[in-house]
Length: 102
Image 1 (cartoon, rainbow, N blue to C red):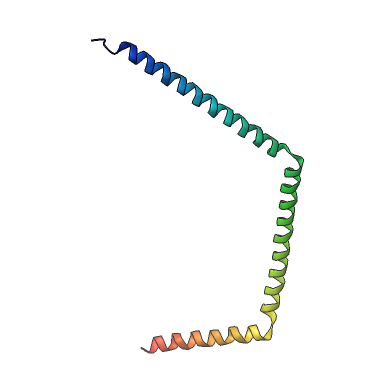
Image 2 (cartoon, rainbow, N blue to C red):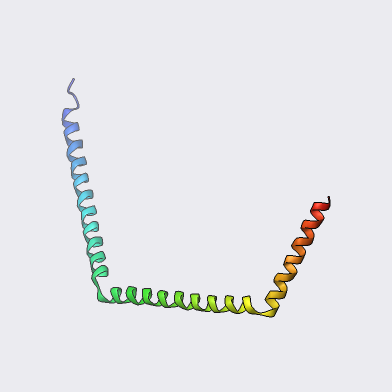
């Protein structure tokens, strides 16, 4: 019952050779990707750009907080804002009175 023994060994040899060539190609690609990643990660230019970007983001967030606080404070104090809030309170209380009457 071993009529296909030789053919099977040839197929195994071809498959083994194919797997080895695929493995070596994948290994070469992985090595190149790893080398490129190391070059990019360790370059001083990338480090400086990342650090300056973080510094700029911190500064812009602080500026936004300052302007937001200042504008909110001026809105709370302005006569127009007080009148608007007073109108809203009157409308809400009149709606509540109407709801109680029903």
